[in-house]
Image 1: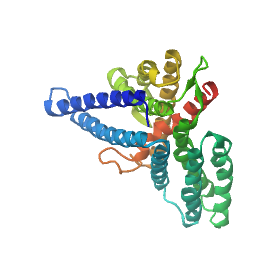
Image 2: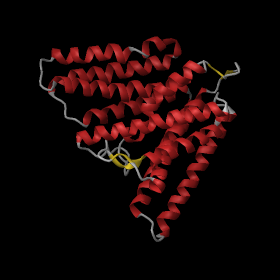
Image 3: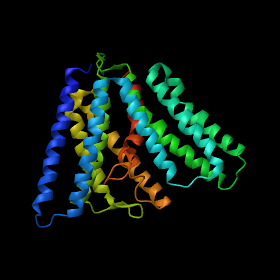
Image 4: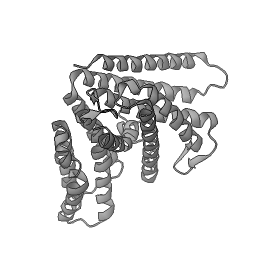
Length: 318
């Protein structure tokens, strides 16, 4: 059963989301001069996505760590499906993809669910064994056309959507201690902290980019993302992370630095995924979430930030 701190954190998230929803309703009805109707509509669609994500996450938190692992496994499976579907596959890939979806994917999350005692297995299974197996299995199919490209696509999708994302629920099983040596037992709060900071960082980056953004990072990939937006997000997300230190094993300055690390990785991850989508000629990875793209579009920042956050936490706070 979650402790009192968990309920406080859930309350803070729900309160902030309710205020944002109220603002979105007012903006949608106000028709104030200078208001971008398309931007308001996108903001409202994003809020609907957040409500769904928060609802699912809260249910998982109340149900326990195993349910949270299952939820992340489901999100990972669908994200991998969206990633693979961006590029048509050949007949020779089908049996390889069977192993990817129905052997390596569930095995990774089963090992995660069994706890940190299996770290040596889940930390190398996909980067080592799956990466060797995929091209070997594809070669057995006898189809050499675009062989390297096909194998690289499958391997990268497995790495990002399964391996990297699986490090988020892996936080639940770390034996955490604070810098002063005292034990920390509220791992669910740490996972909630990580997901919240990851999602806030991109929202704040868009706000800063729209407000003061002048220098676009990569115009050919994403014309709306600026250096000013990234710097502004790093500062504000870091401060928010420091204010939420009570939900983590970190002191305020450690939480601030963790917020900075997560923000940078989330920004890099989303930009990387934008480059992949431009290369594939698609705007969004999917349409599962009505009005706001696919699952992978919602969690690409978490995918990139999760392994870094996990390993820094494991190295310094266990």
